[in-house]
Amino acid sequence: MKKLVLLAAAVVISLSSMGQDSYAKTLKEYFKASGQQETFNSVIDQVIGMYKQQMPNVDAASWDMMADEFKGSSMDELSVMLADVYKKHLSEKELKQIIEFYGSEVGQKLAAETPAITSESMTVGQAWGMQIGQKIAQKAQQASGQ
Image (cartoon, rainbow, N blue to C red; front, top):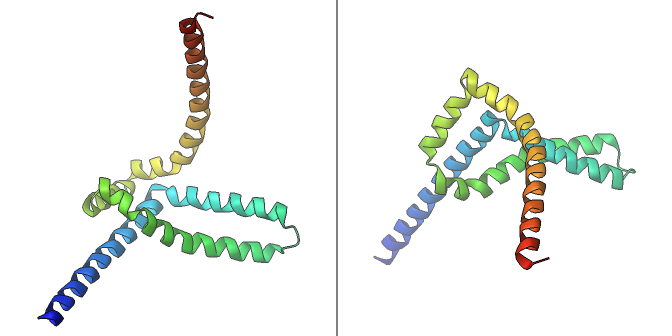
């Protein structure tokens, strides 16, 4: 009986981890289809660029090898790390449907334009945040009687 319980527990753990692997793999496909993988890769390039400045004695071929290595393995790691977060909000079936959307013409356009939209939106968002901050400061001063 004890062996049967242990075997059942092992099967449940195994099936659970297989589901996690499947979801993480689908999540990685989503990152690629949506263009987010390119955004992650540009972050890796930026980090390597900073280290290049700090360590000029490292040759260019080594930096290129590191970039290739991290762009490959980091996406696998990130997909596994983010799987539980995405799982709370999207089923694997829904994620596959989103990937299917990104396979369409309009989905591919959205994926291609997302980095520019994000960059431009950040600039607008910073200006908006400064405006809100100024307005809050003015209201706070008025409320305090100053």
